[in-house]
Image (cartoon, rainbow, N blue to C red; front, side, top):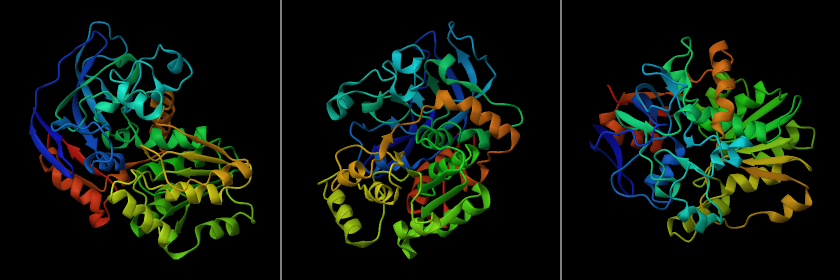
Length: 391
């Protein structure tokens, strides 16, 4: 079958790979209908995430149809149209029992790398390096899904493939940040980043009752989507002092919840941003934390900062003094999709949550290299590139 693979730093290729097989009675095989690029994939392609190997199949956000199932699978049937969270969870360990699914003890069969990096290993993730389990990703015609009764969710008939697609990762990640960040009715929430995850974090905050939601970015087409499709306010950080702007919009106090949805390749203005970029390009640091720094500065005293963007290693000039002396709660997580997907699909079915506008570009899987180039360079207003393996 054809698949989009990692062929080397800054190289994506489409090649023939072996078709997936059932390896466990709890597996299913999906025929992929749609799969989409993600900003965190760019960290892989750029060589910032360790343990990628030439030939690894990319992709972790997808919808598909069950074409084969293991004999122990009971929740889904052959022919079901499903969406699957990007993180793999067994459903039975202590972390899964606490609904912390991306921290599953059994989802990552290769925990040694991340234990060395971070002290403990999170769960596995589709198409996200051998550090995260070495699972083949979704940029392919078919893929294997382990723990299918835990991870596969049948898509309601009224929800299109394109809308459901983003429940796999972008919406669930955004929902994780808004919910675990402590968003309450009446709160003011600020979100750094107007990509798919940032927009979905903002929409989740609105659905959770936030009174005011502000999204910070610099790309006009993304800020326009925030206003038109999300119903949030938008701030262009390249034209204003963000911290001062947020204080002005909140009566001098600052946002109650600040959500960082940018990650390790954040852009910023000023000398600190240039310094971060030079250090990263020279491989003196893996991550550019400028958006995290700004979120900590902007957050009100006693507020909450939630880190949703993907980071890999130590960061420079982390404002620990501000976090401590302002009494902030600082949290982070990969998405706990199995916890949130049923609620998300219900909102999608009702029309309260739409995602079709994020799919700005659609093309066949055979054009994956070009699709990633457009996505990385943000050409033609690209927010996400959707691949159709059957196209």
